Length: 353
Image 1 (cartoon, one colour):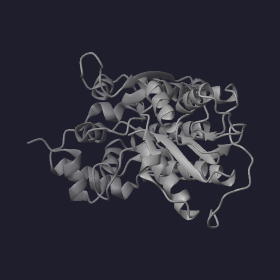
Image 2 (cartoon, rainbow, N blue to C red):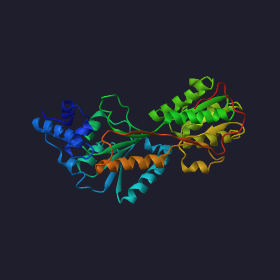
Image 3 (cartoon, helix red, strand yellow):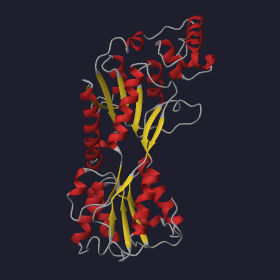
Image 4 (spheres, rainbow, N blue to C red):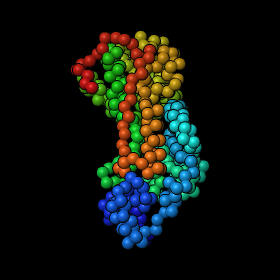
């Protein structure tokens, strides 16, 4: 049975990524660790992946971006268009090209990550799909190619295969908390939220719940509505709740495209925004400046996240920076526009930072 990097890592007492860096002669690892790992590899008869060694000496000037599988949803696509602009700007400054892909080929079902790496198409990968299967993660670590998870990352457990990877993500719990607190501070006594099934949306809903409970407002499951980034479904949900909406209600819609749909539906039913109901979105895509009224929203720090992820990837390619993985949680902020009314704040308890 062939010896793997996992086998070497277990004997050496280091992570998979450290073994890859040792075999690549990376400057991120101390000479003593490097020699120890190489000696173990020699003793075990390990056949090293020549492609991984060639990454730093034979750069192709190309980085792959792996998009999430749900990118076809219009709101998700709009968000990633703006995020890709930030990535492209950073890469252009360094004369590096981008290959845009999904985890799997949508026609053949074949693994695009494995193809890009095996065919030596890219120097490294920026991955925005959190639902990476164990086999693909294992392949990535075995290949030695630098890769970064950004925007979202797979859940990790200490010592597990999903640990020990670089993650540049957004604090969505904080984002949901900020959105809900903003509604409460603008006089809303009840908060409805329109969300989706994905992990980042579950985190936003958790933040919403936290803000409500801190302020003494009951969190009710029946006020959590699943639009699932489907604009037609979102419109139907808004029509359904319109019969029970009251003047002091607020609506936290967890993507800007769903928020725009919600506002248009409410206006068609005779509601005035923000006089009759306050609405806050999430993402801060460009269209928020052009809705009527202009959409108050939660801004995800795309430019900062893109720059940090790209810089880390290039540091790995060039053998710079710390050898341990980096996990950076970027903080969202409120972008205040015109869709939330300015009423006396409703706070059952003191809202805590």
